[in-house]
Image 1 (tube, helix red, strand yellow):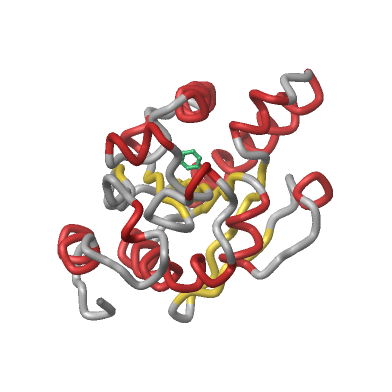
Image 2 (image 1 turned 135 degrees about the vertical axis):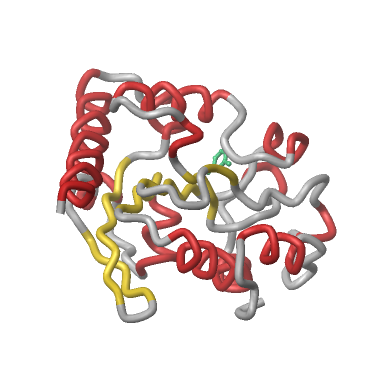
Length: 195
Ligand code: URA
């Protein structure tokens, strides 16, 4: 797996994965998708029912909102890369356990190494906890830059709310928070492009 030199190689190597109990229950493996050289990468929690059927991340209601959020900061979905902490759907859309996340984390880390994004935006509490080891509530931590150590490099990480949460809590406050977080992430992406 670590030897995979490209995203397609990695996908081929891991798409039959049965390393955790989620594997046997999936319809489709949801590897992730987008620009392999994306400067902005989103990391969500795990596939839901729509994603399990499509084999693609964020294609349901939360995905529609994520697409709109991406357009609002002047990008297209295909300019970014979108992946999840776990690649297979947890039953009843429950949060993946830490064991499940751990079994899958090497795959995501290899994706990040291959893509080398300038900025990662984590969506909700699960990617923050499993990728960065931060268990504080998302409401407290969102909007504050974090760092991911990756192969001798540090990648800035902007935690924000999960779009499914935004749909449930469709208040001006929550929407404004996400908008500010994404604007900050985009500004960093643009700044890096100038250097
Ligand atoms: N929620 C997620 O966290 N990821 C998806 O791919 C879809 C919904």
